[in-house]
Amino acid sequence: MPSSALPPQVTTALEAAIDATGTFDGRRAISAGVTPSTADDFATGWAAAGKPTRNATIDQVAIAEVRDALPSLRACSGKNRWDYTGIQLNVYLDSCNTTRVAGILGTAGGVTAAAAAITAVTGIGLAVAGTFAGLLAIAGGIVTICSARGKGVVIHNIPPGPAVWCNGQ
Image (cartoon, rainbow, N blue to C red; front, side, top):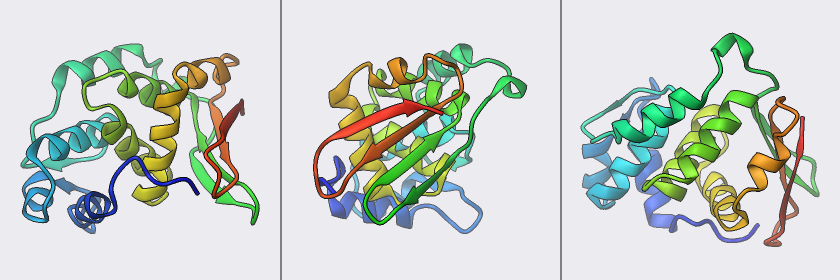
């Protein structure tokens, strides 16, 4: 797997700031060593995925832009999960979460916020989500192209290589 876009100490601190109920606590992340801006970026991505946050400043403009781009929740198509086949790592995002991740990548929170959203909706670890978010940020519009059918995307990687590609679900 290519290295995560998030340093290991940041990944550990952010994961430690998510409690058993799935709530992200920005103050706890800062106490564990992340910068306030990183905690806020993560909280924005976490909130954009519909997860609760506290003690962090959420970028409400980014949240509103992502929310406005989403169809109604009843219109979401596809699945949210991840799997590893032994050769290939796959992350599945439904149509709504594909829109969220694509929208979040364009915000100030960028990779950190997108990694938070990917972790929140799939349950995959933050280090892996950070890798995918970083690769997607480099690849630019790949998520939009792969989601053209409106059914969400499957994002693939063969570890430990840097190549990432996607298909529609």
